[in-house]
Length: 376
Image (tube, rainbow, N blue to C red; front, side):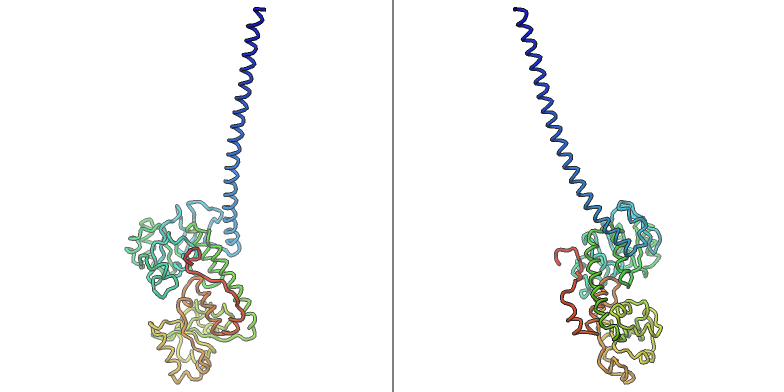
């Protein structure tokens, strides 16, 4: 009996240790399960973020496929570096630009429409005009010109240039390590969207292009629907200015594209004028437009030219002058190379069909100088 008692104690100790081990294992398993649950939730959240990110990228890619953006060489590449083909050749952007400038008012207006305005560090002098479309956004920014010193002083990591930029300037900027993307700015509906998609890819800011493009599509759709009502009543329109000579907006011009967008006949194009070109006084008389629009500011002689059309006896039989259908128009919307010339089309419709347009349009999508800014 004395031998049995110690044995019982040993057995009790063994069972106690086993029980504790099982309990400890159970606690460890519970902790592991809890940790795994947290990790699973974390992965779920990360997966959700990836789904949202992929959805945004997929939407962007859908737009690229629909409208085309040939300068984007690899639209599936959403990382850095990325490579694009511009007018000045293949450009490699090593990292996301944070200090962007343009030397073109059209690029300014386009970028402010969708980009983070804090990344645009200066603006062209034309964009800073108090009468300009984006003046409120640019008035406190430094002004730049096409002089290399003013550009370098802003320490940009990307510069946008238009087709008219000095090749020597572009070469000098590239030589000192500043990437330059020189692009055409298009007049057509699809061309404008191409420009926006391309620029947004270049700067790595695609999130807000959808709203801007959506408004463009809605505006164009309404204009197309409206002009079908007047398919049998197509007025002839001449866009003309006078500086040192008469200048008409013909085929391929910005003003001509606006005339054609609203369904009117661009009489200068009919008479073989290409781009913005000089015409004679006799040609103006021969064209005999039903409407004349003058995209020339008062400061640059627009009012003087307007008055001369009525005072010059040789113009007295032109239909537009006989019926007093001559209009000074806002150059901001008729000469800019950005989506804002769609507003020029709306204003031309108001001239050609004023009451019909107001009856047709109940609510109209609006552009704002900055589509993603809270101030609007």
